Length: 362
Image 1 (tube, rainbow, N blue to C red):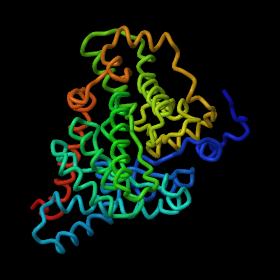
Image 2 (tube, rainbow, N blue to C red):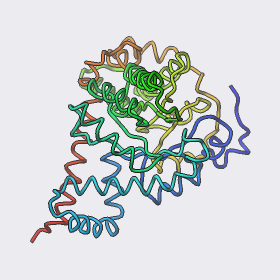
Image 3 (cartoon, rainbow, N blue to C red):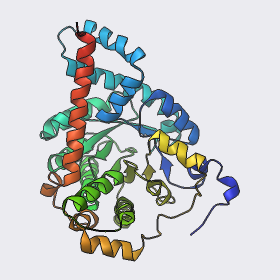
């Protein structure tokens, strides 16, 4: 394990960006946060229904009038269609902020993630068609498709059709590995037909903090007593294992760590050729606390923690083993259901926000 001198960790995020292959993305497309994160060394950003809703609410002085303009320009559009036009515009603006990093990296970084509509999660063809359209919004757009049984089909087909993929709604090693394999199949199909080869920059997310959340909920519901500190390591363990499998198998996509709940979901992954995507407030706290930048990606989680979780928490085994879930089981895994419901609820809240602007309460 190599440790950088504490003297150079006044800005840990910048140090990590300049000295390790681990890259930083900002878990928001909010323009102000993204600008500051780029100053920390960020070379990517993401947007999903929850994030988009937060960014629009934070800048309602800008987006309120724009929503009214879009409604006037599109008199036949409902609130959902208008809301998604705002999400697209927000994403295009963020993509422009990241374009210099896209050019500098040859397309590997500098990506802005835009998520497919969660209401399409049962329709692979609709997911693919929307992914293709989103991909055309800017050359550095990367499109988020969920790691569900339907999503795996869409991931392969969208990759084949030239879309750069960010796998989302993904919490387990099995989902990550199956998603990476789908990307490989899509790339191989392109090669077999001599379609243009380029750097797709595709990433496979594991929402480590949401896995931790689910396991805490599961153990409470099932009255399982385990050191709560151990559950803070579950997402980290899944991320480390998935990264090792990706390296071993030579997958062309990278692991992305998202849904932060503790700083270890940044610090324990340093040194890996992967992406960490904390919300901006987590980035600020990492810098404020001057966390050391250490090469820890290959340092395993302590064996007794893994052994205890495997023995006492069946849901952890399902999340940690490469074959812990079948694709059919991705849809019913607890964290998947919780997250899809949250994304769908955020969509409904965005509809309501647009509705309040178009039809103000008397």
